[in-house]
Image (cartoon, rainbow, N blue to C red; front, side):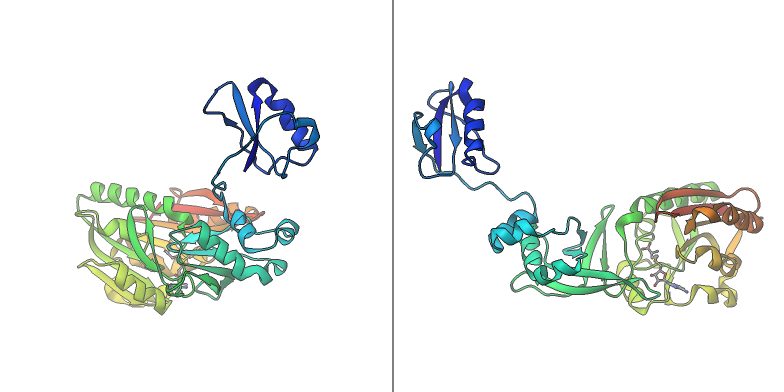
Length: 348
Ligand SMILES: C[S@@+](CC[C@H](N)C(=O)[O-])C[C@H]1O[C@@H](n2cnc3c(N)ncnc32)[C@H](O)[C@@H]1O
């Protein structure tokens, strides 16, 4: 690329002149002249320098093009410049294992495959890119459409994620998994360890809305923490993943409606720790689950609560558990609601 060789104190002046002549490349990089540190090398875009700077010597320097910083830089390699400039491109995408999921607006859909290819160019570890068309059904799975896949690779939505150092298989098209609550799962591990220490023995744990098992994975690898474990989900696909992800000699894994477990005598008052993670329905389901908990056992759950319902929800929990309920806002869910965590003990 052609550069002007300029005394360093004149750099700003020359930059301004080139800019005014539209002769300064986008993201132009000024270099120090390696033969004399008192000089700078300034790139310009035309075949010869504009008149006002024509008195400076011109050097032709071989330069690597600047590395792309995001997928939109790669779009410039794949689409005409006028389209890249005129289009508003999606700014957010989500990594799930070796997949990328991205929401598209209507005007972006015709470029879906190109956006996917640009994302693959930018993210060497990504295998395939899907349009995320939203959450569907009671199992809250994603409606996914393939945008692009790496050559000779599978376009399957099955993928392996790593959370807190633990590997879990999942498939966003058939089961629910979100990394957003990973810090809550660290809290669940701490809660279980404290309870086990207090009781002086390993625990009997029930996770009836286990999904692919992200809450249980950190618990089962902990020595002497789990004596008995029930992991269930109503989604048969999630149960298949549980069987793969949750390998423990004391684990019972079943496809079951959590609300029906109270009809099984062997499960009544059998658990020290009960997890209730069905945030849109947790507070409604809770009364069905309480019979599973031992007296003094701990229930830890998550619920989406509208701002205006917060006090009522607190009262509902008090009426079930007495005063010792901890109900905390953990993160915003929408303009009017929050994801909250409740933790309390069953009355002795
Ligand atoms: C929000 S997800 C939580 C999954 C998992 N605990 C996690 O943290 O990733 C709720 C799960 O409950 C399951 N589910 C929905 N209704 C259910 C029911 N009545 N009984 C058992 N599981 C149910 C869904 O399939 C889903 O996997």
